[in-house]
Amino acid sequence: MADQRERWSIVDALSHSRHDWMNKLQLIKGHLSLKKYDRVKEIIDEIVVEAKQESKLCNLNMPSFAELLLTYNWKGHLLILDYEVLGEAMDCSGLDEEMFHFTTDLFQILNQNIDKKQENHITITLELFKTENNVRFFYDFNGILTDDKTLLTFLEQYQSDAITVQQIHFDTYEFTLMVSKS
Amino acid sequence: MADQRERWSIVDALSHSRHDWMNKLQLIKGHLSLKKYDRVKEIIDEIVVEAKQESKLCNLNMPSFAELLLTYNWKGHLLILDYEVLGEAMDCSGLDEEMFHFTTDLFQILNQNIDKKQENHITITLELFKTENNVRFFYDFNGILTDDKTLLTFLEQYQSDAITVQQIHFDTYEFTLMVSKS
Image (tube, rainbow over all chains, first blue to last red; front, side, top):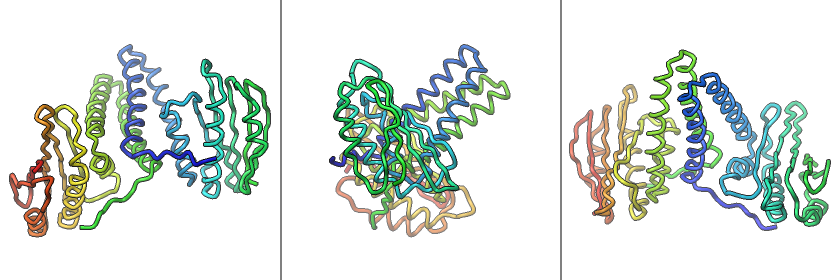
């Protein structure tokens, strides 16, 4: 599949990020004016947790994969992305290009084969095992697949020296994939 | 002078930006815990004003110049940069490369010829006149120049078809330059 990489300019990326931060600030401002100070503190704590996740993702030495995840929702795709990073940050540079390509291809197939009228959500969970120098990537989809076959064919035919893709669970409304080092 | 452009990666730029936003959030959090709610509101209003300035800068169609200004302080230079954008945003794309090069060269000369032990500050003010399709850039320096001559020679020899550089005021501690379309 062709490289779907679209280069972001720094100015565009910072503009999108600024927009997201302004929304968070707006939320804080709203609760402040309602004098809901405890809720404001909770919101700030949630933002801090989210920022720490983002920061961890940026410290894996996976510039292409991290950029894809950080900027994906700014493109206005049907599929909504969420991610979390569990465990201590470690060097995953050897998997960067492979994970970028696999994820880009997967997202593209999903966007072409999901029900446009429904919410379609994917969560990527990175499980880092620093001492074992190992990492696992879980892809949890929730939504409606209009065509399972294209996706199943892609998954079954997926060939890579660097990573192995396993189907943990698969149906039209939900699937979980586990990607690990080969 | 050689092109000093150093390409930022999206991940690095977003990491620096996140760091700045987290500092702002920390400030809000601090005042919240002191129950200084009016000050929190003021801080948020100041952040909003700053973000609007940034947003205006990003809407001038000057990707190189805007990127330089947005990312400059992240490099830890001696010279500290500040900027403001006055007037309604307009298309300044024709001046982007020229302003990027002039500003990069000016910053480089300043960093080599200012007193390291002092605070050295430059404020760039963009005055936009949308109806006249005109724009002026003011460079206000405050600090200590250890060598005036290199800078003065650069300014006097600066040749460009697109822009004209004028010295409004010049001494060792302070100078103001005005750059306008030729």
